[in-house]
View 1 (cartoon, one colour):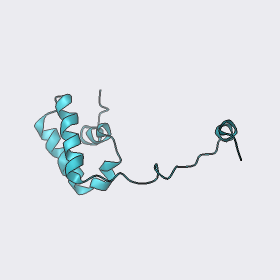
View 2 (spheres, rainbow, N blue to C red; view 1 turned 90 degrees about the vertical axis):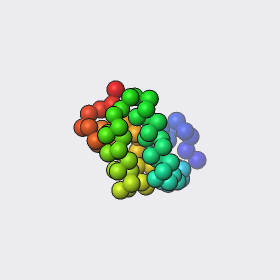
View 3 (cartoon, rainbow, N blue to C red; view 1 turned 90 degrees about the horizontal axis):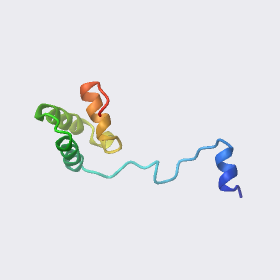
Length: 80
């Protein structure tokens, strides 16, 4: 059996079962999270609506992404 230290030093990388499975969230749950993210950052309603439309197109993808990634995909800018 390989020790944790040897495993880390060997450069090997293995995904755990948890890391390789997508999150189980509905489109509505993701949109609620998105709305809260936008509200905390005082993001305009038109950007919120664009984000919701993007989430609706592929909720499984957005369940595994950050809301910062979604904002960046809309605005082309990194969130502050």
